[in-house]
Image (cartoon, rainbow, N blue to C red; front, side):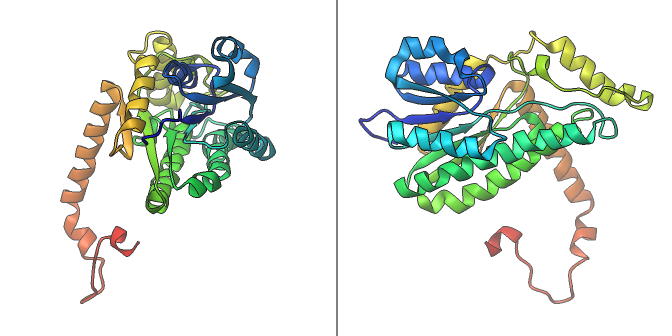
Length: 290
């Protein structure tokens, strides 16, 4: 977007991690931020430093009424939103069989429904402007399923599914969507993850190893969240931003490995796949229908 006016960013989960790093980077560039957090007092230092360039708002994205109020306050203050960043989220880890029903529900309420609510509240304003960019913070676990992270991965797979569909729906309206897939970055994520209260011995070698690795890596992750923030800004500034922005050499390598594995299955089972078609039926790629 080229304009003399500074862009307005609406970012969720700004108190720590990617949200905090991105808020700082955007403000340092002279742009405007609606910085939301469940405890906005943690943003007082940014308000003192940047004054009217930042509006700190309380927001629990699992509360639809709060979402609508925050978006309305943002529009009242800055009259527009140019970039929406759905960053707020957390991780539930443990074997599929170990995770409680309540933890599954809360994981989806935040990572899927919360981000969806914020996006649906902002979309009417982006459509009116015929411009805007939505960044949905996913994970390497939004593209790859890891043992011990099944519920978290499921929530991020869901986020990526509706994000990819949304990108096609809003592209003709001048709105862009980018799915951000970070790997292991040095944020508070590993220290705040939710794990099962009761574990099953049979999963020690799979999900158990994942949990052990997450705890060991806390504070030692190779990824720099400040560099990640600059990468996200670079994507927003680009004339042809990616649908998926992979962050971290670890994720890049893992995605390549999955793509190779998928290609291997496609090739090995190609004839079986083709032979399920009605004789004489016309065939085209599913995407060609939409």
